[in-house]
Image 1 (cartoon, rainbow, N blue to C red):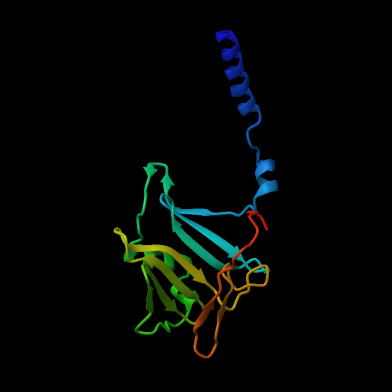
Image 2: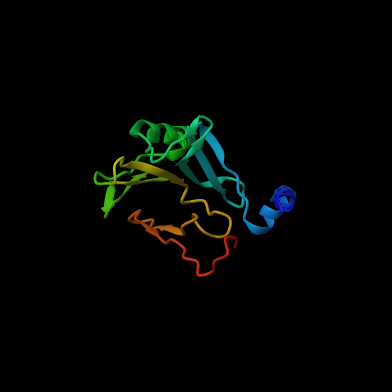
Amino acid sequence: MVKGLVLLLITLGVGTVVLGQTSADLNAKYRQFASYELRPDSVMTPKYATDGQVCEIAIERRQKTETGIVFAAPFSEHEVSEFIDELAPEAERGRNLTKTLNSRVDGGFITTEYTYENVLVRVYGITRPVPAGDRVIVITWPKRTCSGGQNSATSENVDPKTRNAHLTIPVTASGKPKQ
């Protein structure tokens, strides 16, 4: 009886190793995209226009890093400025058109917008629970259309007169992760 149980466990263990997921398995099931490590704890995921230029960049804090797991670590104001300067230099951004009251609070969420002639920067954060702070930075080039015909992953349209952005977040009825 014990030998049979041991044989069953070995068979299950070998079967699990042999039947592990391959790159082809994952590619068949999920859409693949590239992300870049900006810092050991921060990643950038770009989207591209049909001409190959970046049209949107999302910057997020990695939760698992080489040194461990970091939960709920917000970006500091210095880091936000540093990322903006690095990924959309002042010469590329153009003139600063940011209005005085450039933050919106909705419940426990805060969105801060920095508007430039050629670039729109949105910093999404939370006001609670502690530690509150900036969690995601999205840099968009509104004059460039991302592949797929949208101005960004969230279908964002900017009114050229008021420079107000209208944000639409897609909702998918299907349970399938790949579109």
